[in-house]
Length: 180
Picture 1 (cartoon, rainbow, N blue to C red):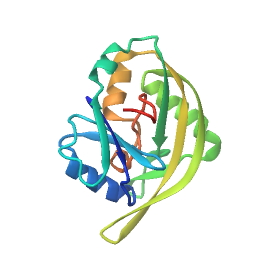
Picture 2 (cartoon, rainbow, N blue to C red; picture 1 turned 30 degrees about the horizontal axis):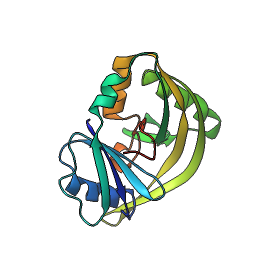
Picture 3 (tube, helix red, strand yellow; picture 1 turned 90 degrees about the vertical axis):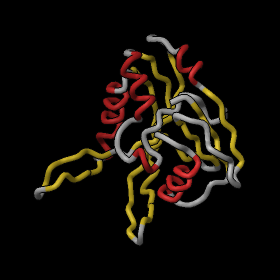
């Protein structure tokens, strides 16, 4: 993923934002919605700017400079669930509150990071598609992480972390909210 884009003024629920982003970006992308903006990490620059104020830049040079042992500030929105086979189906079950810190720590470790972090449970985020409403648990994580395994980290940066990436979860944002 080579481009970081900041979009102001994009409204709607997470599903609506994802649909709007699919119009703007070819190929894969990850995104994170903040209060007033959407940050997108994508393979390509946006096709056009639509009605939104859009700023983008190529961040491949920044990514190429990251080395094992570097420390980076980060933010990450996760959908804290575990998949279990029940009643003949795979079901996603929420992580209990008392296990959240351990679960987040393991996800970051699995992403090649040694992290110090804080997290805030945001509650449920609702999205509607074809008259079907889904609610996903949301936890915002912020901290500082040391790159323990650069190859695993770069894969997590490119692919995201955890479930619900299509609805704005899993983007490991090392670029800060004020970028680009």
